[in-house]
Length: 517
Image (cartoon, rainbow, N blue to C red; front, side, top):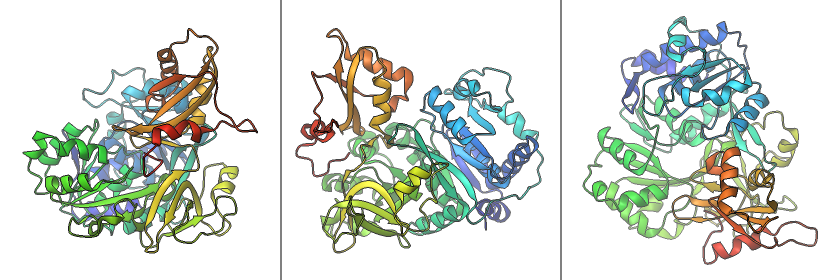
Protein backbone atom coordinates (compact mmCIF):
# COMPACT_ATOMS: atom_id res chain seq x y z
CA UNK A 1 0.00 0.00 0.00
CA UNK A 2 1.08 3.59 -0.60
CA UNK A 3 0.29 6.81 1.23
CA UNK A 4 -1.59 8.11 -1.83
CA UNK A 5 -3.88 5.09 -1.55
CA UNK A 6 -5.26 6.60 1.66
CA UNK A 7 -6.67 9.46 -0.41
CA UNK A 8 -7.83 7.29 -3.30
CA UNK A 9 -9.89 5.17 -0.92
CA UNK A 10 -11.67 8.21 0.53
CA UNK A 11 -12.18 9.83 -2.87
CA UNK A 12 -13.78 6.62 -4.11
CA UNK A 13 -16.04 6.04 -1.09
CA UNK A 14 -17.04 9.63 -0.28
CA UNK A 15 -15.98 11.98 -3.11
CA UNK A 16 -18.31 14.77 -2.01
CA UNK A 17 -17.23 14.83 1.63
CA UNK A 18 -15.24 17.90 2.63
CA UNK A 19 -11.55 17.15 3.15
CA UNK A 20 -10.17 20.65 3.75
CA UNK A 21 -11.82 23.81 5.05
CA UNK A 22 -10.80 26.96 6.85
CA UNK A 23 -9.87 30.54 5.99
CA UNK A 24 -12.70 30.73 3.47
CA UNK A 25 -11.57 27.72 1.42
CA UNK A 26 -13.13 24.30 0.95
CA UNK A 27 -12.14 21.19 -1.00
CA UNK A 28 -13.82 17.77 -1.18
CA UNK A 29 -11.98 14.44 -1.28
CA UNK A 30 -12.92 14.02 -4.93
CA UNK A 31 -11.64 17.48 -5.83
CA UNK A 32 -8.43 16.91 -3.88
CA UNK A 33 -7.86 13.59 -5.65
CA UNK A 34 -8.36 15.13 -9.10
CA UNK A 35 -6.10 18.09 -8.29
CA UNK A 36 -3.40 15.68 -7.08
CA UNK A 37 -3.66 13.76 -10.37
CA UNK A 38 -3.19 16.97 -12.34
CA UNK A 39 -0.21 18.02 -10.23
CA UNK A 40 1.34 14.57 -10.72
CA UNK A 41 0.92 14.72 -14.48
CA UNK A 42 2.33 18.24 -14.67
CA UNK A 43 5.37 17.11 -12.70
CA UNK A 44 5.87 14.15 -15.02
CA UNK A 45 5.45 16.44 -18.05
CA UNK A 46 8.17 18.68 -16.59
CA UNK A 47 10.55 15.71 -16.60
CA UNK A 48 10.34 14.75 -12.93
CA UNK A 49 11.53 11.19 -12.39
CA UNK A 50 10.83 8.78 -9.54
CA UNK A 51 12.77 9.87 -6.47
CA UNK A 52 13.29 13.47 -7.66
CA UNK A 53 12.74 16.17 -5.05
CA UNK A 54 9.91 18.71 -5.32
CA UNK A 55 10.06 21.65 -2.90
CA UNK A 56 7.05 23.48 -1.46
CA UNK A 57 7.08 26.74 0.49
CA UNK A 58 3.98 28.59 1.64
CA UNK A 59 1.71 28.94 4.63
CA UNK A 60 -0.99 26.36 5.28
CA UNK A 61 -3.31 26.01 2.30
CA UNK A 62 -5.04 23.30 0.29
CA UNK A 63 -2.27 23.64 -2.33
CA UNK A 64 0.11 21.92 0.07
CA UNK A 65 -1.96 18.74 0.04
CA UNK A 66 -2.48 18.88 -3.72
CA UNK A 67 1.29 19.08 -4.21
CA UNK A 68 2.11 16.52 -1.49
CA UNK A 69 -0.32 13.94 -2.88
CA UNK A 70 0.54 14.85 -6.48
CA UNK A 71 4.22 14.30 -5.77
CA UNK A 72 3.38 10.92 -4.26
CA UNK A 73 1.41 9.89 -7.34
CA UNK A 74 4.33 10.96 -9.52
CA UNK A 75 6.77 8.95 -7.41
CA UNK A 76 8.58 12.13 -6.34
CA UNK A 77 9.83 13.19 -2.89
CA UNK A 78 8.24 16.28 -1.34
CA UNK A 79 10.53 18.76 0.45
CA UNK A 80 8.33 21.08 2.57
CA UNK A 81 10.37 24.14 3.54
CA UNK A 82 9.88 26.40 6.52
CA UNK A 83 8.40 29.65 5.17
CA UNK A 84 10.18 31.57 7.95
CA UNK A 85 13.61 30.85 6.50
CA UNK A 86 15.71 33.62 4.98
CA UNK A 87 16.44 33.68 1.24
CA UNK A 88 19.97 32.40 1.93
CA UNK A 89 18.66 29.48 3.97
CA UNK A 90 16.05 28.62 1.33
CA UNK A 91 18.69 28.67 -1.42
CA UNK A 92 20.97 26.37 0.60
CA UNK A 93 18.16 23.85 1.17
CA UNK A 94 17.13 23.84 -2.49
CA UNK A 95 20.72 23.21 -3.51
CA UNK A 96 21.28 20.52 -0.90
CA UNK A 97 18.23 18.49 -1.96
CA UNK A 98 18.73 19.34 -5.66
CA UNK A 99 15.08 20.30 -6.07
CA UNK A 100 13.83 19.71 -9.62
CA UNK A 101 10.89 22.09 -9.25
CA UNK A 102 9.57 24.49 -6.60
CA UNK A 103 5.99 25.45 -5.78
CA UNK A 104 5.92 28.63 -3.70
CA UNK A 105 3.45 31.20 -2.45
CA UNK A 106 3.83 34.58 -4.10
CA UNK A 107 5.22 36.00 -0.84
CA UNK A 108 8.17 33.59 -1.07
CA UNK A 109 8.77 33.48 -4.82
CA UNK A 110 11.43 36.19 -4.71
CA UNK A 111 13.49 34.10 -2.28
CA UNK A 112 13.36 31.13 -4.67
CA UNK A 113 14.05 32.93 -7.95
CA UNK A 114 17.83 33.38 -7.43
CA UNK A 115 18.20 29.58 -7.36
CA UNK A 116 17.21 29.47 -11.03
CA UNK A 117 15.08 26.37 -10.45
CA UNK A 118 11.74 25.88 -12.22
CA UNK A 119 9.13 27.69 -10.14
CA UNK A 120 5.32 27.62 -10.00
CA UNK A 121 3.78 30.50 -8.04
CA UNK A 122 0.64 30.31 -5.90
CA UNK A 123 -1.28 33.55 -6.36
CA UNK A 124 -4.63 32.65 -4.73
CA UNK A 125 -6.59 35.63 -3.46
CA UNK A 126 -5.94 36.51 0.16
CA UNK A 127 -4.59 39.34 2.30
CA UNK A 128 -1.29 37.60 3.03
CA UNK A 129 -0.36 36.94 -0.62
CA UNK A 130 2.22 39.30 -2.06
CA UNK A 131 1.89 40.71 -5.54
CA UNK A 132 3.25 38.32 -8.11
CA UNK A 133 6.77 38.92 -9.36
CA UNK A 134 8.19 37.33 -12.51
CA UNK A 135 6.85 35.28 -15.41
CA UNK A 136 6.59 31.91 -13.70
CA UNK A 137 3.42 29.85 -14.23
CA UNK A 138 0.47 30.58 -11.98
CA UNK A 139 -0.27 27.55 -9.83
CA UNK A 140 -4.03 27.43 -10.47
CA UNK A 141 -3.54 27.64 -14.25
CA UNK A 142 -0.69 25.11 -14.11
CA UNK A 143 -2.84 22.58 -12.25
CA UNK A 144 -5.87 23.15 -14.49
CA UNK A 145 -3.76 22.27 -17.53
CA UNK A 146 -2.80 18.87 -16.12
CA UNK A 147 -4.38 15.60 -17.23
CA UNK A 148 -6.99 13.99 -14.95
CA UNK A 149 -5.74 10.39 -15.08
CA UNK A 150 -3.92 8.95 -12.09
CA UNK A 151 -0.31 8.05 -13.10
CA UNK A 152 0.00 5.66 -10.14
CA UNK A 153 3.79 5.90 -9.72
CA UNK A 154 3.46 5.77 -5.91
CA UNK A 155 6.41 4.95 -3.70
CA UNK A 156 5.93 1.97 -1.37
CA UNK A 157 7.78 0.29 1.47
CA UNK A 158 11.28 1.67 2.02
CA UNK A 159 11.07 4.13 -0.90
CA UNK A 160 11.28 7.77 0.16
CA UNK A 161 8.30 10.13 -0.03
CA UNK A 162 9.45 13.16 1.95
CA UNK A 163 12.57 15.05 3.02
CA UNK A 164 12.08 17.27 6.08
CA UNK A 165 14.85 19.71 7.00
CA UNK A 166 15.74 19.94 10.66
CA UNK A 167 18.47 22.27 11.91
CA UNK A 168 21.80 20.71 12.87
CA UNK A 169 24.42 21.51 15.45
CA UNK A 170 26.89 22.39 12.71
CA UNK A 171 24.74 25.35 11.75
CA UNK A 172 23.43 23.66 8.60
CA UNK A 173 20.06 21.89 8.40
CA UNK A 174 19.87 18.11 8.08
CA UNK A 175 17.44 16.42 5.71
CA UNK A 176 15.36 13.86 7.58
CA UNK A 177 14.27 11.08 5.23
CA UNK A 178 10.72 9.69 5.40
CA UNK A 179 9.76 6.41 3.71
CA UNK A 180 6.32 5.31 2.55
CA UNK A 181 6.22 2.47 5.06
CA UNK A 182 7.35 4.71 7.88
CA UNK A 183 4.61 7.26 7.13
CA UNK A 184 1.88 4.63 6.83
CA UNK A 185 2.87 2.98 10.12
CA UNK A 186 2.91 6.35 11.89
CA UNK A 187 -0.52 7.38 10.60
CA UNK A 188 -2.01 4.07 11.73
CA UNK A 189 -0.21 3.75 15.07
CA UNK A 190 -0.54 7.35 16.21
CA UNK A 191 -4.05 7.72 14.80
CA UNK A 192 -5.15 4.69 16.82
CA UNK A 193 -4.42 6.65 19.99
CA UNK A 194 -7.26 9.06 19.22
CA UNK A 195 -10.92 8.76 18.25
CA UNK A 196 -10.61 10.54 14.88
CA UNK A 197 -13.22 9.32 12.36
CA UNK A 198 -15.16 10.46 9.29
CA UNK A 199 -17.21 12.88 11.41
CA UNK A 200 -14.14 14.56 12.90
CA UNK A 201 -13.16 18.15 12.25
CA UNK A 202 -9.53 18.68 13.22
CA UNK A 203 -8.09 22.15 13.58
CA UNK A 204 -4.46 22.19 12.39
CA UNK A 205 -2.81 25.44 13.54
CA UNK A 206 0.70 23.96 13.21
CA UNK A 207 2.43 24.59 9.83
CA UNK A 208 2.19 21.63 7.46
CA UNK A 209 5.97 21.57 6.98
CA UNK A 210 6.18 20.53 10.64
CA UNK A 211 5.90 16.79 11.18
CA UNK A 212 3.32 17.56 13.89
CA UNK A 213 1.09 19.64 11.61
CA UNK A 214 1.42 17.46 8.54
CA UNK A 215 1.05 14.25 10.55
CA UNK A 216 -2.03 15.40 12.47
CA UNK A 217 -3.70 16.49 9.23
CA UNK A 218 -2.85 13.23 7.44
CA UNK A 219 -4.30 11.16 10.29
CA UNK A 220 -7.58 13.05 9.90
CA UNK A 221 -7.67 12.81 6.11
CA UNK A 222 -6.87 9.08 6.18
CA UNK A 223 -9.95 8.52 8.34
CA UNK A 224 -12.21 10.59 6.14
CA UNK A 225 -12.36 13.53 8.54
CA UNK A 226 -12.12 17.21 7.74
CA UNK A 227 -9.06 19.34 8.47
CA UNK A 228 -9.58 22.97 9.38
CA UNK A 229 -6.47 24.84 8.31
CA UNK A 230 -5.13 28.13 9.57
CA UNK A 231 -2.74 30.39 7.66
CA UNK A 232 -2.18 32.89 10.50
CA UNK A 233 -2.79 30.99 13.75
CA UNK A 234 -3.26 33.12 16.86
CA UNK A 235 -5.21 32.50 20.04
CA UNK A 236 -8.03 34.70 18.68
CA UNK A 237 -8.14 32.99 15.27
CA UNK A 238 -8.07 29.55 16.89
CA UNK A 239 -10.96 30.51 19.15
CA UNK A 240 -12.94 31.69 16.13
CA UNK A 241 -12.28 28.50 14.15
CA UNK A 242 -12.97 26.19 17.09
CA UNK A 243 -16.44 27.66 17.36
CA UNK A 244 -17.24 28.37 13.69
CA UNK A 245 -16.29 24.90 12.45
CA UNK A 246 -17.51 22.93 15.48
CA UNK A 247 -14.02 21.49 15.84
CA UNK A 248 -13.78 18.04 17.46
CA UNK A 249 -9.98 17.67 17.68
CA UNK A 250 -7.08 20.11 17.80
CA UNK A 251 -3.45 20.54 18.75
CA UNK A 252 -2.26 23.42 20.95
CA UNK A 253 0.72 24.51 22.96
CA UNK A 254 0.21 25.27 26.66
CA UNK A 255 0.88 28.97 26.03
CA UNK A 256 -2.22 29.20 23.81
CA UNK A 257 -4.25 27.16 26.29
CA UNK A 258 -3.22 29.63 28.99
CA UNK A 259 -4.41 32.59 26.90
CA UNK A 260 -7.75 30.96 26.12
CA UNK A 261 -8.45 29.97 29.72
CA UNK A 262 -8.06 33.63 30.68
CA UNK A 263 -10.20 34.97 27.81
CA UNK A 264 -13.71 36.24 28.51
CA UNK A 265 -14.63 35.50 24.89
CA UNK A 266 -13.51 31.90 25.27
CA UNK A 267 -15.44 31.58 28.53
CA UNK A 268 -18.64 32.45 26.65
CA UNK A 269 -17.87 30.21 23.63
CA UNK A 270 -19.53 26.89 22.79
CA UNK A 271 -16.94 24.07 22.87
CA UNK A 272 -19.49 21.27 23.13
CA UNK A 273 -18.21 19.63 19.90
CA UNK A 274 -14.59 19.47 21.12
CA UNK A 275 -13.57 15.92 22.13
CA UNK A 276 -9.78 15.80 22.30
CA UNK A 277 -6.94 18.32 22.63
CA UNK A 278 -3.31 17.33 22.06
CA UNK A 279 -0.61 19.60 23.41
CA UNK A 280 3.16 19.50 23.32
CA UNK A 281 6.40 21.51 23.60
CA UNK A 282 6.10 21.65 27.41
CA UNK A 283 4.22 19.94 30.23
CA UNK A 284 1.02 21.31 31.74
CA UNK A 285 0.60 22.58 35.27
CA UNK A 286 -2.14 21.26 37.53
CA UNK A 287 -3.77 24.70 37.60
CA UNK A 288 -3.78 24.97 33.79
CA UNK A 289 -5.13 21.43 33.53
CA UNK A 290 -8.04 22.32 35.78
CA UNK A 291 -8.73 25.53 33.88
CA UNK A 292 -8.51 23.76 30.49
CA UNK A 293 -10.85 20.96 31.51
CA UNK A 294 -13.32 23.51 32.87
CA UNK A 295 -13.15 25.54 29.65
CA UNK A 296 -13.05 22.85 26.95
CA UNK A 297 -14.65 19.87 28.65
CA UNK A 298 -12.46 17.68 26.40
CA UNK A 299 -9.90 14.93 26.89
CA UNK A 300 -6.30 16.17 27.04
CA UNK A 301 -3.19 14.39 25.74
CA UNK A 302 0.48 15.41 25.85
CA UNK A 303 2.91 14.23 23.18
CA UNK A 304 6.69 14.21 22.74
CA UNK A 305 8.54 13.52 19.53
CA UNK A 306 10.93 14.76 16.86
CA UNK A 307 11.07 15.09 13.10
CA UNK A 308 13.27 12.00 13.12
CA UNK A 309 10.50 9.96 14.79
CA UNK A 310 7.59 11.29 12.72
CA UNK A 311 6.33 13.28 15.67
CA UNK A 312 4.67 11.37 18.47
CA UNK A 313 7.03 9.07 20.37
CA UNK A 314 5.43 9.16 23.81
CA UNK A 315 1.90 10.03 24.84
CA UNK A 316 0.49 11.09 28.19
CA UNK A 317 -3.08 9.92 27.86
CA UNK A 318 -6.45 11.21 28.97
CA UNK A 319 -6.40 9.00 32.08
CA UNK A 320 -3.38 10.88 33.45
CA UNK A 321 -5.23 14.16 32.94
CA UNK A 322 -8.31 13.25 34.98
CA UNK A 323 -8.82 15.64 37.88
CA UNK A 324 -9.99 12.79 40.09
CA UNK A 325 -6.95 10.68 39.23
CA UNK A 326 -3.27 10.59 40.14
CA UNK A 327 -1.75 13.84 38.82
CA UNK A 328 1.82 12.90 39.76
CA UNK A 329 2.59 11.96 36.15
CA UNK A 330 1.72 15.39 34.73
CA UNK A 331 5.37 16.44 34.69
CA UNK A 332 6.20 13.48 32.47
CA UNK A 333 5.86 13.21 28.69
CA UNK A 334 3.94 9.95 29.01
CA UNK A 335 4.81 6.44 27.86
CA UNK A 336 5.99 5.09 24.52
CA UNK A 337 3.35 4.67 21.84
CA UNK A 338 2.74 0.93 21.19
CA UNK A 339 5.40 -0.34 18.79
CA UNK A 340 7.99 2.23 19.95
CA UNK A 341 10.92 1.27 22.20
CA UNK A 342 12.53 3.77 24.58
CA UNK A 343 15.88 3.62 26.30
CA UNK A 344 17.89 6.04 28.38
CA UNK A 345 21.59 5.74 27.55
CA UNK A 346 24.77 6.71 29.27
CA UNK A 347 25.98 9.66 27.22
CA UNK A 348 29.58 8.49 27.13
CA UNK A 349 29.28 4.70 26.84
CA UNK A 350 25.90 4.31 25.15
CA UNK A 351 24.90 1.65 27.67
CA UNK A 352 21.24 1.42 28.74
CA UNK A 353 20.57 2.89 32.17
CA UNK A 354 18.25 1.72 34.91
CA UNK A 355 14.93 3.49 35.66
CA UNK A 356 15.41 6.70 37.59
CA UNK A 357 18.85 7.41 36.11
CA UNK A 358 19.28 10.41 33.83
CA UNK A 359 20.83 9.97 30.40
CA UNK A 360 20.24 10.43 26.68
CA UNK A 361 16.79 9.47 25.38
CA UNK A 362 16.99 6.92 22.54
CA UNK A 363 14.15 5.65 20.35
CA UNK A 364 13.68 2.60 18.11
CA UNK A 365 10.65 1.64 16.04
CA UNK A 366 8.93 1.72 12.63
CA UNK A 367 8.38 5.49 12.83
CA UNK A 368 12.09 6.33 13.13
CA UNK A 369 13.78 7.85 10.08
CA UNK A 370 16.00 5.57 7.98
CA UNK A 371 18.60 8.34 8.17
CA UNK A 372 19.69 11.78 7.00
CA UNK A 373 19.97 12.85 3.38
CA UNK A 374 23.56 12.54 2.10
CA UNK A 375 25.00 12.84 5.61
CA UNK A 376 26.85 9.66 6.66
CA UNK A 377 28.62 11.43 9.52
CA UNK A 378 25.32 12.51 11.08
CA UNK A 379 23.91 9.01 10.61
CA UNK A 380 26.90 7.43 12.33
CA UNK A 381 26.51 9.77 15.30
CA UNK A 382 22.73 9.47 15.54
CA UNK A 383 22.23 5.70 15.57
CA UNK A 384 23.48 3.00 17.94
CA UNK A 385 24.72 -0.33 16.61
CA UNK A 386 21.36 -1.94 17.41
CA UNK A 387 19.30 0.74 15.67
CA UNK A 388 18.29 3.15 18.42
CA UNK A 389 18.12 6.81 17.42
CA UNK A 390 19.91 9.10 19.87
CA UNK A 391 17.68 12.15 20.36
CA UNK A 392 20.19 14.44 22.04
CA UNK A 393 17.63 15.05 24.81
CA UNK A 394 18.36 14.20 28.45
CA UNK A 395 15.71 12.37 30.42
CA UNK A 396 14.85 9.51 32.73
CA UNK A 397 12.31 6.69 32.78
CA UNK A 398 10.44 5.77 35.94
CA UNK A 399 9.52 2.23 36.99
CA UNK A 400 6.19 2.52 35.17
CA UNK A 401 7.80 3.51 31.85
CA UNK A 402 6.92 7.20 32.00
CA UNK A 403 9.49 9.48 30.39
CA UNK A 404 10.64 12.68 32.09
CA UNK A 405 12.53 15.15 29.89
CA UNK A 406 15.21 16.99 31.84
CA UNK A 407 17.55 18.84 29.52
CA UNK A 408 19.25 18.78 26.11
CA UNK A 409 22.66 17.41 25.42
CA UNK A 410 22.74 19.46 22.29
CA UNK A 411 22.31 23.19 22.68
CA UNK A 412 19.07 23.26 20.74
CA UNK A 413 16.54 25.94 21.67
CA UNK A 414 12.83 25.36 21.07
CA UNK A 415 11.05 28.67 20.65
CA UNK A 416 7.36 28.69 19.75
CA UNK A 417 7.67 25.11 18.51
CA UNK A 418 10.60 25.94 16.18
CA UNK A 419 14.05 24.38 16.63
CA UNK A 420 16.96 26.81 16.82
CA UNK A 421 20.61 25.77 17.09
CA UNK A 422 22.93 28.35 18.69
CA UNK A 423 25.87 27.38 16.44
CA UNK A 424 23.99 28.70 13.40
CA UNK A 425 23.03 31.96 15.13
CA UNK A 426 26.52 32.45 16.53
CA UNK A 427 28.13 32.04 13.10
CA UNK A 428 25.96 34.87 11.78
CA UNK A 429 26.50 37.21 14.74
CA UNK A 430 30.25 36.61 14.63
CA UNK A 431 30.26 38.19 11.16
CA UNK A 432 29.14 41.52 12.64
CA UNK A 433 32.18 43.86 12.50
CA UNK A 434 31.74 44.94 16.14
CA UNK A 435 31.35 41.43 17.59
CA UNK A 436 34.55 39.89 18.97
CA UNK A 437 33.01 36.86 20.66
CA UNK A 438 29.49 35.51 21.07
CA UNK A 439 27.48 32.75 22.75
CA UNK A 440 23.77 32.08 22.32
CA UNK A 441 21.68 30.22 24.89
CA UNK A 442 18.01 29.54 25.46
CA UNK A 443 16.27 31.31 28.34
CA UNK A 444 12.69 30.95 29.63
CA UNK A 445 9.91 32.85 27.87
CA UNK A 446 6.31 32.99 29.10
CA UNK A 447 5.16 33.47 25.51
CA UNK A 448 7.42 31.14 23.49
CA UNK A 449 8.54 28.63 26.12
CA UNK A 450 12.15 29.48 25.35
CA UNK A 451 13.86 32.28 23.45
CA UNK A 452 17.44 32.89 22.21
CA UNK A 453 19.61 35.29 24.19
CA UNK A 454 23.04 36.36 22.92
CA UNK A 455 26.02 37.22 25.11
CA UNK A 456 28.34 39.42 23.07
CA UNK A 457 31.89 40.62 23.64
CA UNK A 458 32.15 43.82 21.59
CA UNK A 459 35.14 45.28 19.81
CA UNK A 460 33.80 48.74 20.57
CA UNK A 461 32.01 50.14 23.64
CA UNK A 462 29.73 52.01 21.25
CA UNK A 463 28.00 48.83 20.03
CA UNK A 464 24.21 49.05 20.37
CA UNK A 465 22.59 45.66 21.14
CA UNK A 466 19.67 46.56 18.87
CA UNK A 467 22.12 46.78 15.95
CA UNK A 468 23.16 43.17 16.59
CA UNK A 469 19.55 42.00 16.54
CA UNK A 470 18.89 43.96 13.33
CA UNK A 471 22.00 42.39 11.77
CA UNK A 472 20.76 38.93 12.67
CA UNK A 473 17.36 39.62 11.15
CA UNK A 474 18.95 40.47 7.82
CA UNK A 475 20.56 37.03 7.64
CA UNK A 476 18.33 34.65 9.58
CA UNK A 477 14.69 33.70 9.93
CA UNK A 478 13.28 35.94 12.65
CA UNK A 479 12.45 33.06 15.00
CA UNK A 480 16.17 32.20 15.11
CA UNK A 481 17.24 35.71 16.05
CA UNK A 482 18.06 36.66 19.64
CA UNK A 483 15.31 38.61 21.39
CA UNK A 484 17.93 40.13 23.67
CA UNK A 485 21.66 40.88 23.43
CA UNK A 486 23.75 41.35 26.56
CA UNK A 487 27.19 42.92 26.30
CA UNK A 488 29.81 41.24 28.50
CA UNK A 489 33.53 41.71 29.03
CA UNK A 490 34.31 38.04 28.39
CA UNK A 491 32.67 34.64 28.05
CA UNK A 492 33.29 31.86 30.60
CA UNK A 493 35.40 29.03 29.21
CA UNK A 494 36.86 25.77 30.45
CA UNK A 495 40.51 24.77 30.30
CA UNK A 496 40.20 23.62 26.70
CA UNK A 497 38.63 26.90 25.65
CA UNK A 498 35.05 25.69 25.27
CA UNK A 499 32.40 28.20 26.28
CA UNK A 500 30.57 27.18 29.44
CA UNK A 501 27.03 27.68 28.21
CA UNK A 502 25.49 25.94 31.22
CA UNK A 503 27.04 28.64 33.35
CA UNK A 504 25.45 31.32 31.16
CA UNK A 505 22.05 29.64 31.24
CA UNK A 506 21.96 28.69 34.92
CA UNK A 507 20.75 32.01 36.45
CA UNK A 508 17.77 32.14 34.08
CA UNK A 509 16.63 28.59 34.85
CA UNK A 510 17.17 28.72 38.62
CA UNK A 511 14.21 27.22 40.44
CA UNK A 512 12.82 25.52 37.32
CA UNK A 513 12.07 21.78 37.60
CA UNK A 514 13.21 21.33 33.99
CA UNK A 515 16.14 23.02 32.28
CA UNK A 516 14.15 23.26 29.06
CA UNK A 517 11.25 25.37 27.82
